[in-house]
Length: 301
Image 1 (tube, rainbow, N blue to C red):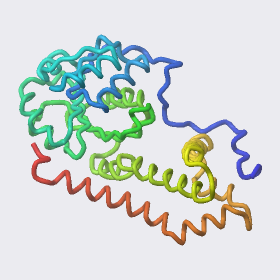
Image 2 (cartoon, rainbow, N blue to C red; image 1 turned 90 degrees about the vertical axis):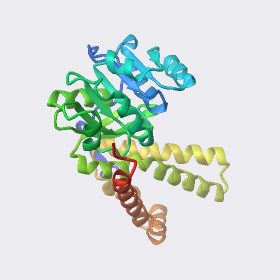
Image 3 (tube, rainbow, N blue to C red; image 1 turned 60 degrees about the horizontal axis):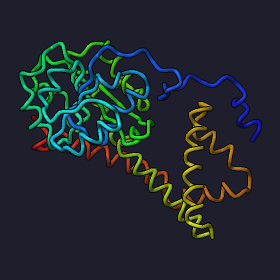
Image 4 (cartoon, rainbow, N blue to C red; image 1 turned 135 degrees about the vertical axis):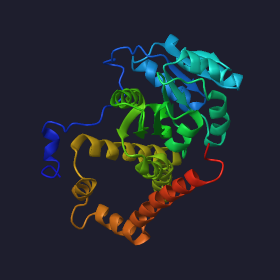
């Protein structure tokens, strides 16, 4: 194993930016608005402030639910309002952080209130840039983002794409903001469905893997609490090994699998059970469903 992982002693590869409060970035001058103050909006706002990107007083969130507004204010120290139009009028960057089923109503209330000087960032799953432009006006600068729930703990994996009117500077700004809650990659819009299938749905697939590993430990006699803790740390540690070494996961797998040992027998059991094929099929199925949702009636504007 020493030879196999010898590159751990070499300079680490260049990795995507990670959220950090140790080296805060220069404070942005843009005022950030969030239409919707749910979990994802709160995670974003909290990440912006913790990373030193945005001053709390530059945050403004709207939501019809007073409890959601209260949670946002307590988590971010930002300002709140029940009025979406107020957010549109007082913000330079406006995040649409509502459910896809709510987007048509929200967009209808914003049409004509967002000028070309403002940037609109949508995190509504499945809503295409063309639909957003149709609803808000073709002159509006748009960015579409596919985040995932680990943004809530600063470990998000996001993809984003730019609308026709968005600039390269807009892309850099969005990447910087999303970097406060994880990593982000700019892609063509046609690839965002694949992002949805992989990193959007992927956390649920990993939770099943953690649960199954824990069940295996319990079956072999471990207490449930210990089994779940070991399974969780094993997944976290393995992911960090991939990130820290820059090695292909298959190489790291081979490093653990000694000839005739326990791991290779376990890997044979995984192959017999179809784990690899099942995960491939899961990403494909989730991607295809994302494509379907984007075309369904009610998801357009």
